[in-house]
Image 1: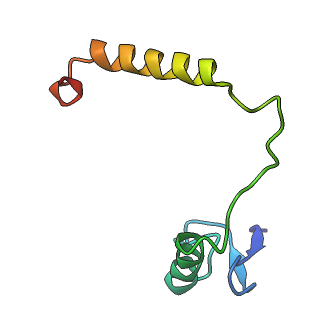
Image 2: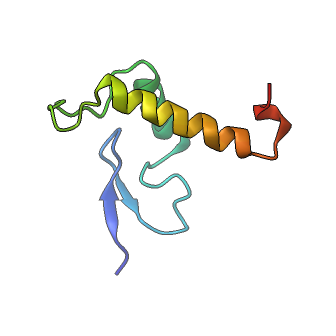
Length: 81
C-alpha cells in the first residue's frame, strides 16, 4: 500500500511516489504558495540561541581566516584578487 501524506499547504492527501512529482505538495500551485510564504518570511526555522552555540569574536575571526585560506588555495580564478 502506498504511503499517503498531507499536503503542507492545503492538507489534501498526496500519494508519496513518482506519480506525485510535486510531493509532498499536491500540486505546483501549493508548492508555489509555500515558496511564497518562505520568501515573505512567514515561515522560518528558528531556534533559541544559547551561550553554547554563540561564537565569540575570536572564533568568528578564526573561521573567516580558515575560509580565506581555503579560497586562496583554490585553482578557480574567481576567488583570486
